[in-house]
Image (cartoon, rainbow, N blue to C red; front, side, top):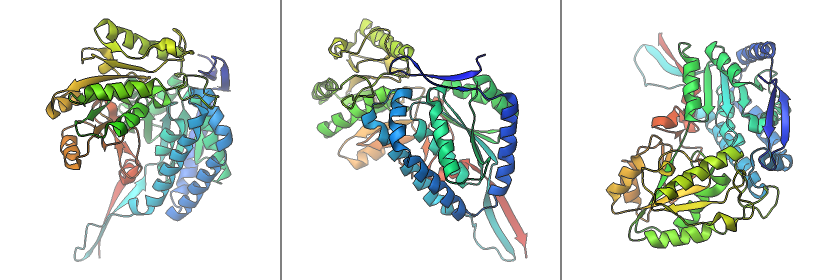
Length: 461
């Protein structure tokens, strides 16, 4: 086992950053400091916690100029979009800070003669956040700030690909003056992470990653009664009804398919279009896709950066090739994108038609810049195909009819139903999934329920 945690940049394949892996003694000391800090922090007022967390948000935003190119080097997102993640980070953090007093207030079941009764929300204790590389600030903030606001201590284990993000979080928390030990980060191996969870040393784990990663979390936690929040894979569908505003649908679905090089858990990976407008939709969709500029994420004109690593791009290329061998039509010529090359992390966007659910590209998570489009003859067919997946994170419906969207949405097996938008998290709503997409929830007041435990008081006068 290497004693280094290393980030290999998708920009040029170089080692961009590396840090020493924590020793077992350092892990133990970190856990001890967190426990000690949490015992005092849980006694603070929510108003005091809000002031401290707000200062941390301000401190993070002050690092924007340095963070944007760091993101490009670490995971490949074009610099023209880098600031957008910090905007989302701020929106989620400030919303969760703002609703904390109400969400964490005692639950009053109503009067009962001779008694005082209420349910208090107590902190869990020590929360371990295991964050991914694809949206490294957004995914981490979903649990880090609410966990602190709820009175917990937090340890952040970030993906090796975005290891500098963990240091940015630490710097922001330290600048904000949070008590020493309350928020800490660790550079860990998978084995170390597993052993921490299996030991019962933490009270709750917030994990965002693959389905197999989620299963590893469950195996590690077995028998410890450690709480788990799991946001795992996705194969998010869209349904374009015949009455949809096609220009609006195309513009947003192209972006939802290819933003971040398609490396988004809630990105659009399959689209079902009313047969009456299918051909017009595909023509517009392909035309807009061909306008992407594939290149170095450090260049301002680039709109599509590299995938996180060459192996990830090769997986998607093989999905495309297998679909074409099975009869699908690929509408984008990769040769028209100068940087695209076999074996490279730089991959052109691809649009497939003539696809079906026997193909991997319509069933297995791609996590890359490819989307399959199928015509459907009815609403029922669209719903059946949208539900024909082991995943269920988000689904979007494109229509001018609000009642139709609500009706269809009740039948879709998913965590979030969108109408006329996609690939977005509203922090006022629970972020959750069904089936292999995971369990638990973050954001909204529901997210606070995941980060606290109920304690009932039944007091006879």
